[in-house]
Length: 177
Ligand code: ADP
Image 1 (tube, protein in one colour):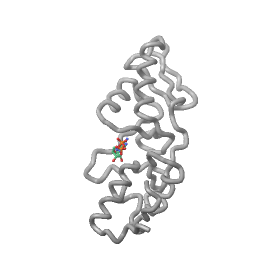
Image 2: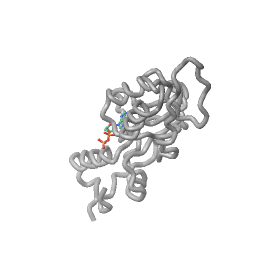
Image 3: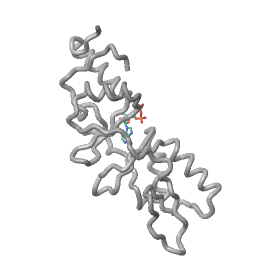
Image 4: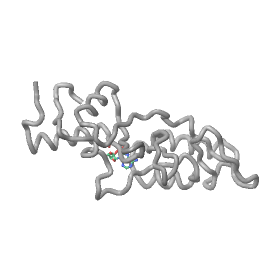
């Protein structure tokens, strides 16, 4: 993101974030309750670089963010090296592993690959502030929340596309000094 481009002050994070109303829902993981097979199916059905992790589908409370690459590598390694990890194993991102049935497969603990403090903005954060945060912190993505609930995601590319879109529609809204 070039620092010389000043951002249109009227856009908000909610205008730039995905998913849009017509898009499929945000692809996210829950901190417990999903199996290795379910996580693999979700990751493989999309091309996203990362996935937010939430407490539960009902609460939508954000607990962290995992990169696609780290998920795939960890699952692959565990399947090869960790005795008993199979598609039916529970994936847990929590600190404490919930008790599992003695006759069930062992859980796969993935808290170690999760970013525990992903950057977030609220849906009403002005985009000029969000762009500033991306630049200053060198972010690749940022999550969007509303009343503490996860709503969406903004990637660096989303910002660049939005800037290009505004420049086309209204070239005066982006000031080149
Ligand atoms: P990039 O924007 O660099 O291509 P991604 O491949 O991660 O990065 O994202 C592609 C698009 O999908 C972006 O518009 C982004 O906002 C959106 N996106 C990213 N992660 C998710 C996700 N987990 N669920 C839904 N949409 C996502």
